[in-house]
Length: 115
Length: 113
Image (cartoon, rainbow over all chains, first blue to last red):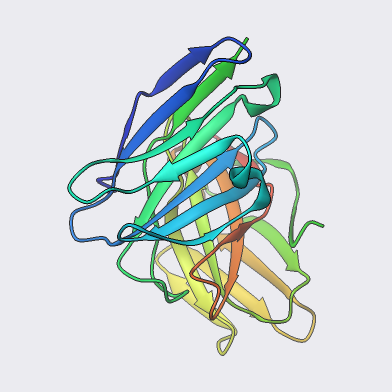
């Protein structure tokens, strides 16, 4: 069973508001991923980190989205100005390495609703 | 462009029956194919995975088949149980991609008792 912790489980924001969610990866996992899963079950990779460094991110995250994984603190994903289209389940995953055979362990997600 | 495609979108089978889910992909650099199982209110969990050098992997009631030439794979669940009712995602990744996974859109499986 995954031990990735995500908070809050549910988040409701108005359009234009900031939305921030946090993730504690499994102990000893240096690699963290953020995915967005929409209501049609489509997954979108957002960003990944190894320790505190960004490995890869998509264009979307370079605009309204920001993320960080500070040392000795939870990782976080923040949407600066929420839009209705941001309503989705945000999943955090962690793994032992960046090799593509390394299993990713997912948390339960933060379900964001933007009114 | 959808990198990984799954079918069917939804499926209902009777308890004890065999479930077959199919998947196809575009990118020939993909070499690792995990299948994830997701229950409502939970994140996806790895069910079984296969490398592109293999054509079959079995784990209990779950078997995945891989056809590199056709860029297709499938997941077979024998003796399907009501507890298998979940959404199943086919996924793929490539070496050197920092473990970025591309997911299909899922198959919602209902197993009726």
